Image 1: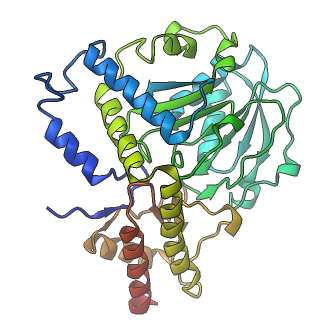
Image 2: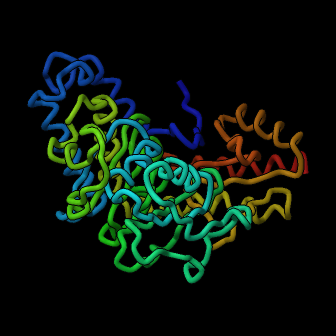
Length: 361
């Protein structure tokens, strides 16, 4: 079997060693006589796995003790709807800074439950840059300020943590979590779908300052109350145990590889290889994002016409470079370079791009 380089934006490529370990342990896990997906989430063995995974994640991300860690079913979009229910009072305002498609999605999920103030919106410039912090129109009494740390579709990434004063900063880190060192203490809450850097689809991670959990929020069912999930160690109801297990294996892999400092170096090298192929093409390829806001994780790029784009997708797939089609909202091409993508994959793509230009430019 030969595994191709998979540039999918999510569900995304996973480390081969993690997949092989999961394959080996599928039928019988840790001597319990059954698969991890078959045993009770309330068994001593799974509870130990859950605690071990949280401890590993805390070590990987240097999460302070005054932050709770929750493992929640579903993806980030679900959390976007639950944020105002848990952290905003009825009728209270929340500020949102939009830098792409997923910021707009966050607003859509929040509007039924909170007075949304769009403090800044990069759409006027086609989401090619992050609106300057000095131009943000923040509210004095906002429940929180929400940003999307990295936009997977538009390829825009915050390279600095914005200062929003005493209002809690809430950030969707689904596509860039654990890709470099991060000062968690600068945020009130970080949430991330796992299916890009942390593991498989179907489970999310939430890192929330404990004092925020004391907020009354709005009337909501117990299952939608983060306080209840925190009190039950993320086992208020049956969690996605297989996904939790794979997330744990992925975190262990990242620690063994050198942690976030090592991945920061790798991710810088990978993105540089692809951007160099774009910038050195004389306009044959183009990336429209302001250089200071370019994403390291997701690189959208375009060819002169759709015929070339279609040919590029066909030939790249034949060359073992998968899932390079751009999102339907934007078109073109896109390379996602999450932690599990090796440098050889990015270099292989860059080499293919140069060869394709020589043949079709």
